[in-house]
Length: 450
Image: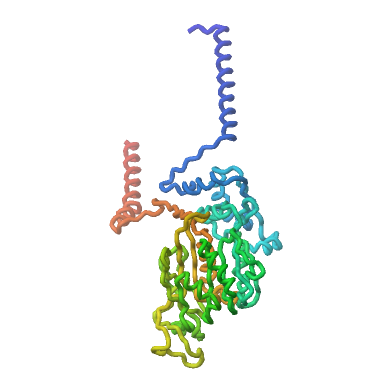
């Protein structure tokens, strides 16, 4: 082929145009990569991407989400948090993540109550949630709680010697109330004599062990609240109903006389006979995945008959060897046939019924516990008392509808062989493979010699 100057110039022009177009396409792809992303999770269980439930929740969130991670300079901790939050950021661009070294800001750490390295503080529309355990399920459920609009008021009745929700005395509920406020609940105490009306935005009404009798008008207001579909937590005591007999009749509960005595506590080194222990729980939303022992000092047994329209069950049941002691709790305490009620005894019941309307999925919820001491400052840290108290409020306020996201595991991370297969593989690698290589080298050497 004859190559002229014109042909040479045309070839150079074609090469220059090709190079320009190639660079333009590469630049366009680079620009598009900054505006659009594409990710593919090829793992067998999709463990590197969010579940469908988490993605649906992110689509409903309106507004930015700020996440602050209190983590040390350990890159392994920060990388794990960064990788997990990156899955959320792919679906919601306005999720921000900031790292704070707790060693450099001890005052802020103490103020926020940060206790674990890697703990997260999630801020959404002025509401905050702390997470000590970082996983997709915990983050998604925290976002779900923060996304719920409206103020969640917990109203504690006062004026009759009740336990104060933010009090500091041993019998008060201050430590529990503080944890409730950290979870976004708003707490107020109400004297029905001074304020003879229960607000409509009351998520849960709490009766925390009155020591004197309520007035008939106060009891009528509480009954009207319950009959109108309000949620109620009743923390009773063995010293009587104090005028709440009409409410007990409405709910179908009856507090048994005496204090529950559990002799099994002596095996655990507990000398106080008034301390009852509960270690097994029936299936219920309050005790879902709950396997911690709870302790109840000075508890009263409860007899429960569901009223028409209500569904209920015993949630807390004492040991089989326990009984309700009506005599003196001093010296050698023993069961008296005919005077005491044998166990097992019900310490707490939960009940619910459908109602015609309302915001809480059309269901009214009530919990009656025969002991208020288990949530007091003196006993809150024992066993799973705190967790049970939080579960009760979450269930009563309809905050129990958390997203259950199963842990994604890799099905191909372990390889199992039979003893025969292990022997064959070991013999092959240690004997056959070296002999084969040696034989191959010898054959090649012999052929080259020839």
